[in-house]
Image 1 (cartoon, rainbow, N blue to C red):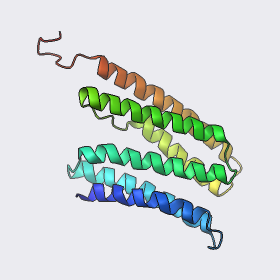
Image 2: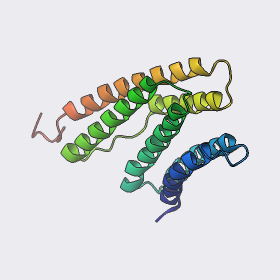
Image 3: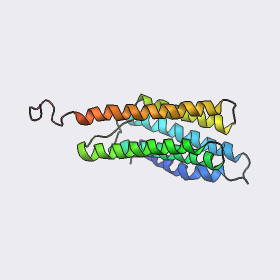
Image 4: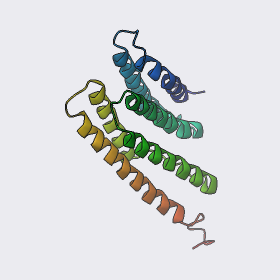
Length: 182
């Protein structure tokens, strides 16, 4: 196991730790500690991607598990915020639907073409905006709901962009340039 994949495993472990801290009212500053776990998860995501690209440690497992860890962490955080009545249910439904469509689409492309769907600028921007929104929500900033709406909207745009880009990739003949399907 390489370092980037180990960092992804750490992120999977942090997913279970987050709700325990968030709802542990016996612990002083429990929501701040939970937020710190969320930030550590974000930092490990950035770090594992940097290390994997810099030292050519990219693996198929990492390409599949890294985004899964990110999606599960985000959904866990949003579920905690929903349970705590900080955000409405429609936010969870939109994000869950988007992530389900992404997973199904990625599985379809991998099964039919051995194509791995990778993160791009729009997906990373949406994730970044969610980190800002969660920060604003946890610290109860006045403009938190507006940032949340922008993050949700950016997620919808990212899904549309992924769908169009990967549909175009899938629509291309598998053996382009070989004469077989030209």
